[in-house]
Length: 163
Image 1 (tube, rainbow, N blue to C red):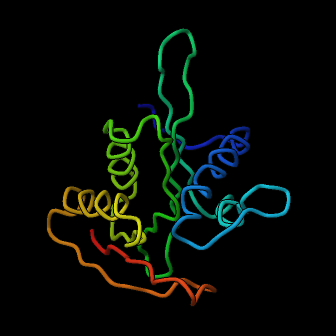
Image 2: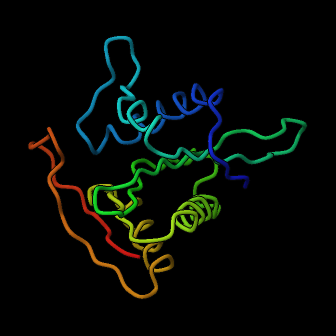
């Protein structure tokens, strides 16, 4: 896997991957696409000038060259902590170790305290992020539940706090 900050000319790639991310989360976030069939990418747009977007690429062979297979989006919190604002790997590379590598390398590139949200209703994500927390924060981490802003009808997010 190659992980690098997304270049300005690669933001359209992130926007396309965001559609797959939005589709995956719609099952747990009570969200629907807009009338044009696309999921909103407001969070991605807000992070463009204030966060760091990493693009994960791999070479599947067969002369294809590097192809995008995921992303992580990091923003700085108000108290000096880092937030994993969004994280996604395509279904083709899930359960291959690439997601683990992407998560750990993203965290490694931003030393200090971290806060990572996930949905308990998404059992694969819950298990994934708890395994990542064990590995990334060997000195300990904790969880807290926080309401999802603007969506009081859905269960609260679980936040991992570590580092």
